[in-house]
Length: 521
Image (tube, rainbow, N blue to C red; front, side, top):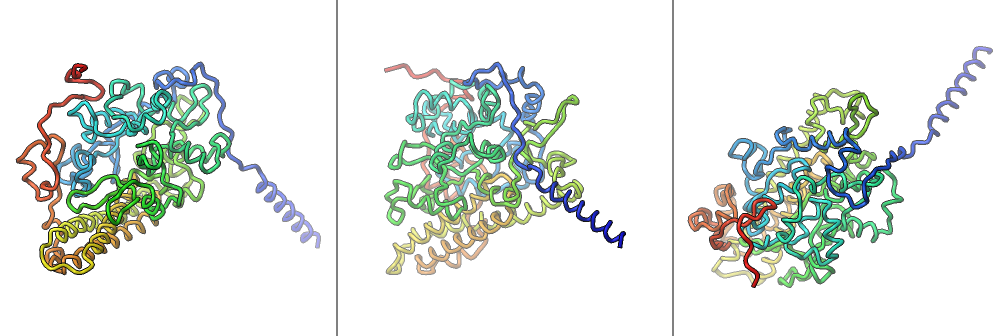
């Protein structure tokens, strides 16, 4: 009996200890407190080095531009080129990108992203922004996610800034000092997390949220969510023209965002009245949407996001330098670049690096396979609509309505493909959502094909039943300079739907003018 009482007493004591352990405060860790000699408006990256030399050392590692993982890395290869080896092409490239974005600046050049330190260098050299004229032919909004200089630009011009021409500001930025860095996420005076992003500030205000009072873990995700999101440049009928807006009012899933875009534009195209449209595809005459890079939306309800694991936990893991106290690395990169996968094994302590790497690649393999299928069906949708639009025979009574429906499904199918394609984890941030989105993309695009075949009285069915790569070859090379060349413009049947550009010489090399400015009139 005594042994039983002793045992019971021990169990009660154990339970008490367990309950006490469960009641320990597990709230967010306290934010480190700093007091610097920096001014609130300091945006030069080098100014932070004396204050935080070890962190700055890790930040400079973002200059690395040669290491690849299985599906990505930091080599700026052409993302449509699966023919040439690195650094120009790569085995995991999507050959139809130039076809799908024809008529839109993305068709000229789209390269894999390098480290954040290259943000200004790369956008100032990219062919998407016109380097051959005084005007960049893209709005100043394109500066938004590239530099903390945005604080000065918006401070000076207010909402008039967004619709100004991109090239107007080329000579005002230093490609090293003003590229993405400390001031994009921190208040220089005390290094508190802060937002510089106007669209995210607007969204939080609309939701009645104050960034300063949010839990620290949520702040750590939101500072990445300033840019790693889907966004669009607002039509003037809804507010300041070209201002960036996050389309989250109806939700953050691709279906929600697609529905949002149906009511937030100035388009008057029959069947698409009131839709937001990025550009009209010249081959199918479909009003299109271009997805950006919705990592934040994908991560949020994925397995890691739902568990409270933030971007920084995986992409800014803890390190120790010079025997100092542990700190977050500011080398923002893929955990897969580390042979030991230390970021992953902070939580997955019972798994080997080899096992974890295999699981990531297994997921990405499955998503990539379906991404490529969705890409091909999207191309077939444009070609089916083109063929139906040029059909000269007897047409069904509901031909016009069928063509609207086909274009609607083409637009939706390509947006859903692009939503996954533009997201930088090849589905790993949320495998379930990625695969579901790609299945829907394939369904919508196939509906576009089927509907266009009906519009053409089924006369195009046989041609469209074959291999799309034989019917419409991928466009490997295309640029602004090539579009000035008549020989190039005769090299692909889809090029006849875009205009030959007039010959021009380069005006810009990065942020430097290489041709004198025109004399003032």
